[in-house]
Image 1 (tube, rainbow, N blue to C red):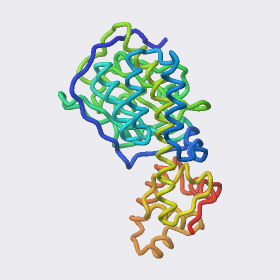
Image 2: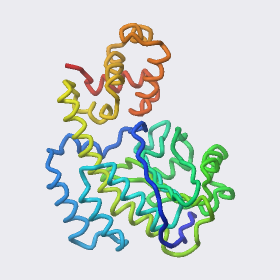
Image 3: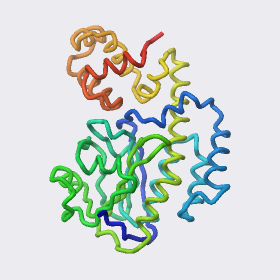
Image 4: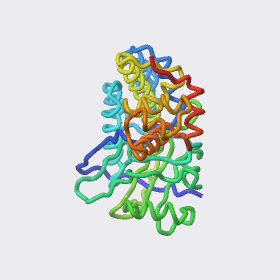
Length: 315
């Protein structure tokens, strides 16, 4: 049984960061980017009607948060900032981090958004991949309710490797759960206590579960769709042309990575790509690792297959 008996003190000062160079794996909610027609106000009205005009949000204090996030729906970074800082303050924890991905990916990259308590020297949980095949990670993706770990050191569900990663980030207690679209999970969000074990009271877990499900999941998904659309418009003005599926994978690549990806899609070897680009072999190797990380491709062969299916092209 998962521990669910936690509850709420409120907040301290905090800081926030969004790390652009993180994994943006394939997630089904992004399919809406192709359908989004550029009318942010229409999306705001739809979400407001769904979330605020009826008693949809179970954790009542989160209604104001939802309203503020909707006002900033066209700014994904601000949505993340509002969400993670609010949740950290409401839970009284020391760190909240989140990332995009899927359960099928080999690795998960946390820390695309992270809020930390500035009153303590709280380590970041980002900065490197987590083995997404770990049983605890898979449970976070698939369980209907978030996981709760009262004491990371004592919890037998946590594998030694994951415990080492959590301990290195100072984690003592943890909540972790999935961000979900209508059909699938598209990201993870975690709340960590690093200075003490989480208080054993009755409201914290409900706050986390209900806010993630009722507020974060639908709003962040829509904000990401809008961000994808905006990035595609910028790419279009730059002369790039993406197939309908490629937009989901390529919008977070740098211009240099896009060019390398185009050459990979033609079947060129690392050596030939390095020659054509006037770069060293190690530079191309580094860029390809970054491209695979951002697209969720487990190998160069998988990346070529992904690009082929996406009809990736350059005008």
